[in-house]
Image 1 (tube, helix red, strand yellow):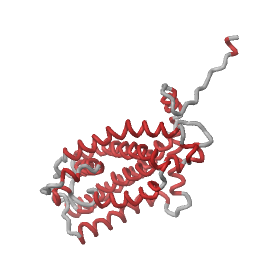
Image 2 (image 1 turned 135 degrees about the horizontal axis):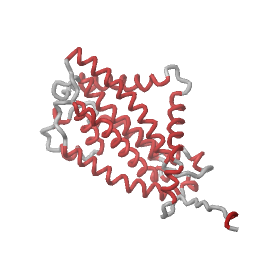
Image 3 (image 1 turned 30 degrees about the vertical axis):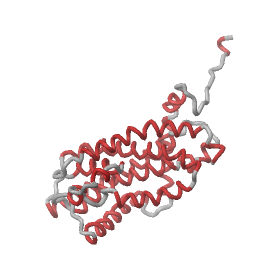
Image 4 (image 1 turned 180 degrees about the vertical axis):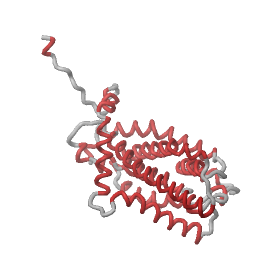
Length: 283
């Protein structure tokens, strides 16, 4: 009888139909649960909890200001306080590096649950990215406090372009996520990448314009276009441009990073979904 007919559920992690994307919307709440889990685990059994989201970037800011501003003697962007410029670089860098590392380690770090329950696997790195955005929002709040302090100390006033910061941060998160998904398929087969990636990210923090001004220190160098090939340069420079009123827009770095994003999104999805089908046999 028609009334007794049962609805069929298709489980096809690497199919070419639309079922995967329908499931992505159907299980969307799972991404928020993953985000909640990541935040809870990160600060569980810590004395100051979310305070680490404030202390960690401040310590990093002081350290990098000492290294690049004090020891190396690099100049800030115009008359912007060096602390503000460094912190404005640390916010997108932290989001980019964490999203990249989380996306790259998705299959390894979540193998336990992925081997037991079916869900669109991409929800796991999406959830982690949402958790990182929470930390980013806290860091952004700290930056406002720093701006108030330096307004009274040195008369610093941020640019009205600061209203564009949320859009830039979404771009940063997307770039980091899909670059990580691109690497995740290689990370499953070659575990050396999983060990190398934290080291590469640590080096990247110093070769990317996190704690120094590109235009003030390297604006006349012949190798500047080659330097801008680094995908992080464009997003970091654009975020700083949103904060610092006197800073010129780095269109070259912007469009190069935008191009990297356009490349990583389809490649990341393609390789990630291809790996979904066989990673259980490898991990």
